[in-house]
Length: 173
Image 1 (tube, rainbow, N blue to C red):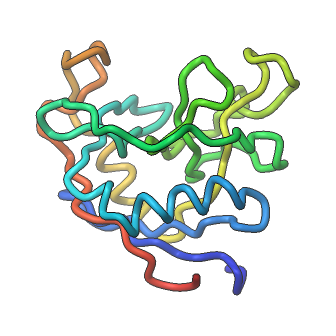
Image 2 (cartoon, helix red, strand yellow):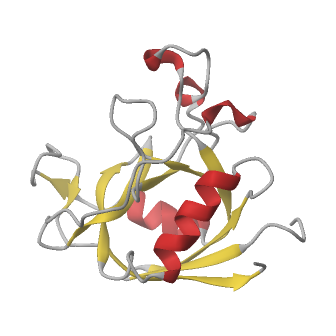
Image 3 (cartoon, one colour):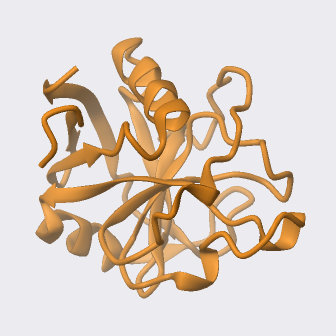
């Protein structure tokens, strides 16, 4: 762990996940994530998209599948040299390169195809900004939860809501 990198604790209804955020490689993204955490934005949101051999995504919807209004989109830092490997946390976004706000995902397998490969929108990639340092068992438990249809996310919505109870800095900045 770097002395400059903050560690946050993501408390969920299935257990806790600690993330070390890479402020050196993704300063804009880390500042954005910490601002949402410190404002309590993530409290009561859910992991709304779970695909077992891919990733778990959360941080933007309530258990009623209502989208929370996030702030302004941030610059995509996918060109920071970090790779979407198992256990990394990255920003979710739309097809627009610089569209990430609050939603994030944790890769449950190596997802190199999500890495930055060029400046075109289809090759820009997804900005990794940290990694799981404890709670991999919780990530695995979330990833293996039964899913079904819900909202606009097809069959990838957990049948029982997996609530993000809080996200708080526990070490660092």
